[in-house]
Length: 112
Image (cartoon, rainbow, N blue to C red; front, side, top):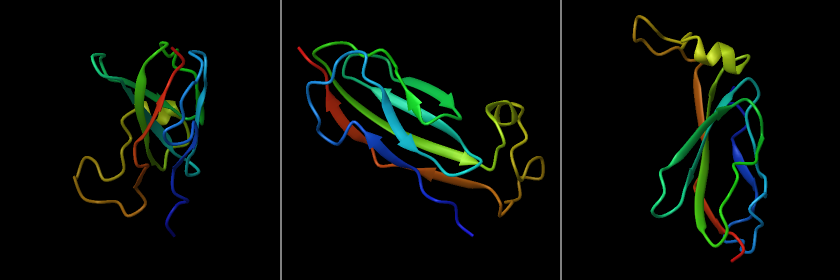
């Protein structure tokens, strides 16, 4: 059975006027760990790994951001993910229980 897909919840696509302390949220499949990526022109891309569904990355005012989430599983926790117990290794064969659920990217902007 395929897992429930990941999806971005807030902010909505193209939303403007977010405060710098805005939290971003998404849904994720059960038993997954997510890679959260946040980009803004002229800034390094920020990447976070989390088993959560809300993140307050500390945004800067007067910027446009693009973000997305990719969730990997099955992993019971962030520690299990970091422990290197990836399905299919070390044989490099595919374990059919492994999944990747990713979202399309979405942009938003913060207050001037």
